[in-house]
Structures are given as structure tokens and as C-alpha cells.
Image (cartoon, rainbow, N blue to C red; front, side, top):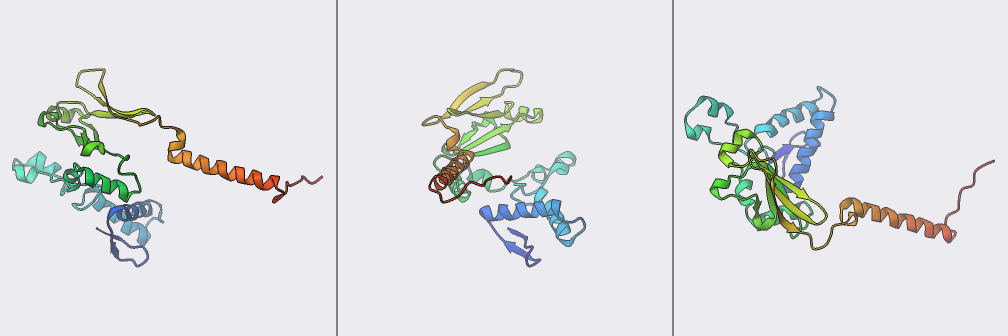
Length: 223
């Protein structure tokens, strides 16, 4: 996909994580650049394409058929065709490639999709691609419930397991099922923030060792 190139004023063709990073820069430029500047104007115009463009990775469909569905009876004109991601992501190897692209472990990572209806009457399930992909929340809107037969899903994660809560219209208590158990309890040390804390601890220990060896001196307050 071609995205604006702030260095040359033209465009550059990108894909994968590099594409999404460039789109993130473009969106921030549209918001933070001086109002009315050429950079802000170009980025703002690009935002409109990201909202409903046929190749936009943020939109994911070939068109917005709201007016066609409202005013026309031609089913072909009313049909919105989804991006290849929605069919390819059912395959475990594709999900693994996506996770690897973003620096995640394809064996332990998960992709979570929201706003995608799960049509239970057609045998669809919220757990796909060998457990690498979870499709949640589709059907929470009442407008979808006639089609889906359910009121959506909620993904619940704690230190022991991943669970899915299936919401049924008219029921106040969802049905909760365990979809994956952790091999061992997940601790703070296993998270990205935990890794940062461990690094800070090591830095403090190194500072203390340097002080004890006399490599650094304590500052004394002036009288």
C-alpha cells in the first residue's frame, strides 16, 4: 500500500508492520501538525481514505454499502466484500506469520478480533486457527442478534487461563468456558512491564555494587 512520505513529499510502498507504523505516523501528523500546514492537510486527506478506502487495512472492506442497503434492492450492489484477512486468518500458519511480524511468539501469542459477528447457526465458532485467533463481541448490538443468534462474546484473561463468556439474548448470566489454560501461573515478571522492572532492579544493583567498591562517591550536602 502507498503511504505519504514526509521526507520526499511523495509516497512510498509498504506492507506488514512497517505499513502500520507509517500509518500511525500519518494519523499523528493529521492531529498534531500545525493546522493548515501542507503536512497536516495531506495527512488529514489520507485519514478519509483510511476511514473507508477499499485497500485500507483499517477499514477491511471494498466499500461502505450503507446507502445501497438503505435505498436499493439489488443484492449485489448491497454486498460488502471483506479483505482477504478475514478468510486467511482462519489458517493457523497465517496467524503465526502475523504474530511473528509484530515480534510475538507464534506458539503462545493470540490475535483478538472485535466487531466481527459469529454466526452460530452456520457453525461458526469464536475460537479459530487452532486457538491463535479469538473473535469476540460480534453480536452485542441488537441489530446483529437476529443474524447471529447470540449476543456476542467476552474474552476473560487471568493469570491461570483464557475464558470466553457467551452472552445469550434475554439471559443475565453468560455461559463461560475455558479455552486455554496457562502451563503455569502467569506473574508480573512474565509481562513486558515485568521485564522493565527486572531491568531497573539490575541497574540499581549495579549502582549499589559500584558504590560499595568506591567507584562512585556519595554527594555530601554543603553546609
